[in-house]
Image (cartoon, rainbow, N blue to C red; front, side, top):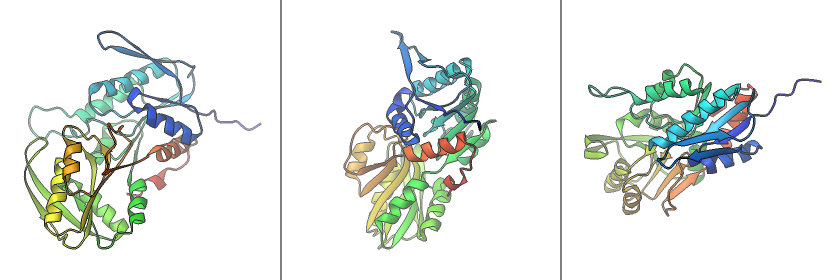
Amino acid sequence: MPYQVPEPKIFACTQSTVLGEKIAQAYGAELGKVHFSRYSDGEFQPSFEESIRGARIFIIGSTNPGPENLMEMLLMLDAAKRASARHITAVMPYFGWARQDRKDKPRVPIAAKLIAKMLETAGATRIITMDLHADQIQGFFERPVDHLFASTLFLPYLQNLKLDNLCIASPDMGGSKRAYAYSKALESDVVICYKQRAKANVISHMELIGEVKGKNVVLVDDLVDTAGTLTKSADLMIERGALSVRAITTHGLLSGSAYERIEESKLQELIITDSIPSRENHSKIKVLSTAELFADVMHRVHHNTSISSKFIM
């Protein structure tokens, strides 16, 4: 009889349990059982409640701050390595701490590089992630990295809206490459916002490069944190004559006063993915599921088939 490849086992960190269940269901598998023992001082210990010896396992968990989410992933990777799992893939819908990808001033860390090394040391033999803050982070790893693009979800959504006079916009200079890629796929114009920061999360000045009058604008970014840049960009574009402004951002961190800013802004709609659990429902926020995307890629990785069709941008 021909050799049958054993099916992988899928597990999830605490904060990604809901997404993990959706991915497992889309894959056609049950989510594996993990028990977390917790001490009164906050220390915790994960334990796989089934044998994983010799198996390929996928551990699903976004590592957005606080640090507990990253620590969960590291401990589960270490536990899997010590339990003799053969292949250990860290599935990280959101790769946290990625904004620290270089030294932008003296005496600061490169956190993204540090975390890459921590994941490898803990036991990860492969990384699957989506829309890294900077593409070069893939080079921080010595293990294979499958860097997926949420454009596979966002482009069909935008095409179904059938917007006239569509214009793609980047809320800052750093996102111009992403904006141009969307504009090429959608055959639309591009505008760029130029901003200056007084300090982190505080914008001192913003200007618009391009024309938005009479256009339906879609802002494109990899993440939205406090929503300061996004909402200020939207308000500026409406002032300059845009008919409507929407935003698509892969990772909805939505910290601080983000929800209030979105509600009070000229944004008509914010479309995000479920890479990070949303804290609350909001009339302006639409969440697209990544479960089918990750399940498909995990299936292709397990069966050693190409995933290049998922790199459409």
